[in-house]
Length: 173
Ligand code: FEO
Image (cartoon, rainbow, N blue to C red; front, top):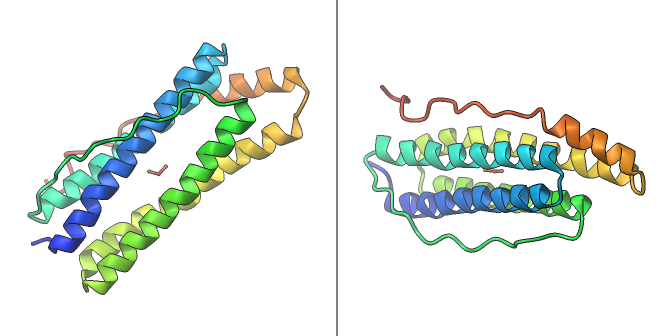
């Protein structure tokens, strides 16, 4: 049985992950409106990954006999000043999410919920990658400042990103 305090904290994190998806879909829409379809594709793939993060929590709560409750999702911004500003906002968002995951680990520890603590390790590792992916693009954009050719090449490269849904709903079967 899932500890109530932990259950409540995970339900809040499900919303945070879904907000992340919402934010990245909004960034995708902004890029596509700016004819940067490769960056739009990258953001859409990222948004689907965030939905996976949310549903992995969903499955975990159910597996532990808890109750998933969907709370409200805030409206994300509609536009950003530039690709650099957008990816910087994505990086800052990931740093914030890392803090949320760390807070969740603290709650699991304080409730002596070792199973949740172990489950959260996947997210702790994932956040290292999430921050690093966004940071790498921020640095590339900074390096190519003022060179439109570089921007279009990067757009094309980022457009190669795809995301394969890793089979949520099959865990524990
Ligand atoms: Fe779900 Fe980008 O962290």
